[in-house]
Image 1 (tube, rainbow, N blue to C red):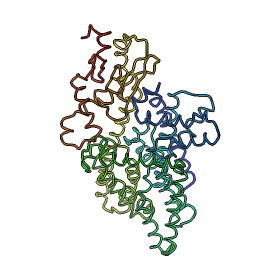
Image 2: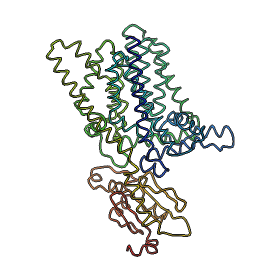
Image 3: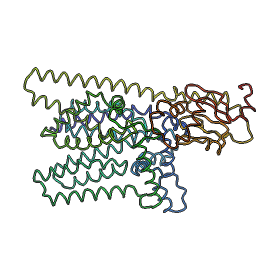
Image 4: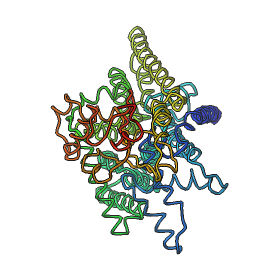
Length: 539
């Protein structure tokens, strides 16, 4: 590797990364003019953002209380590194310059927490495979990884996926750099494995890769058994220390209990479904994989690349580590996880795709018959180009939708209509009380109080809270009353209790309410008292 080749590749890669970063400014500036709009377009961000604000909003009575409030962020589905990184590197610089805006906050969070770590991760994956020796191959691989549909989708929200993937990638990177020397760099891998575990627990899925790495060291006579056990203990110890230090809320019993409850609930939902139990099978994952990652035949090509890469002397170690990381994690998701969120597979599939250059090297070195080499080359190029075109088409569509989501939003159009035609006609000597589905947009306004629930509502909640207006997301109503799904699924207790409410809503006959308006997006119900007082002409 010449310094010139490395430098040219690095400069080009940085240019491509900067271009990608700036391209996503436009769509990531959309959909967050206020908190209700955030809930409409990105419910996860809507759940996370107030927790981050609670960390930064510090009118505390003492320094210790201020530190405590910065630590106990109360959203323990994700670890503290996610919130700490978001606060320090995305929002704190804005606050230092006096900027306080939800839309700018979310733009910074999406760019700094999702886009930037992903770019760093993919650059590291490319370096681990090519060492930047070949300009064309390195840049082509980097650009291809950037076009993977889930990478595009993940670049359009603020979520822990990119950050935890960076920790996973750095774990692999430092193991490769250590190269069975078992020196200081080996412990860097333990540190980042601990950070991956502290953020989303997935660092624990290195349970196969780390023992195999130690076994290789023993097999190649780099260490003896005693040294191997000592190294294993130190790795686990450092990983554990990192886990606890990077989640300081665990030192408080009340927060430990809250975190345990959150994680148990998350584990239950992940393994059994959120509201419906629909089964666990790799076959059920296929539509997700095809849409967000690759066609099955391309996955087979990537798996073949990983296999031949393991037997490539130059990149054997990194491809073996990728296999021992990606395969156990993928098998867990495919066979034991019922919530099929597409981003779950991201840390497993992107390292797998990074192994593609091994096919080219294998073809050049091992296939001696020229006609066979040409045939294999054509098949490889055909599959690669086909997948690349799919990726680019997907990226163009998703990007355009995100860049225009406010202008084309059915939720915002629905709100504009019901506010003008109905809500503005209700004049009371008090604030109007509105219950809405999380996905429904109702603007922040002093004339009303708006409530929502993260889980299905039911008549007992409605009778207790007695909202004046109920605004429901039509898709939610249909999902919770889908006869085909309900008949073949185990329903959660919450959904069983809520079924009568949503069944009546679907029929437009909520007890005590009149359906005044509905379209393809939403349904507006008003209490009978207000309907009689203000909308007699609609009866």
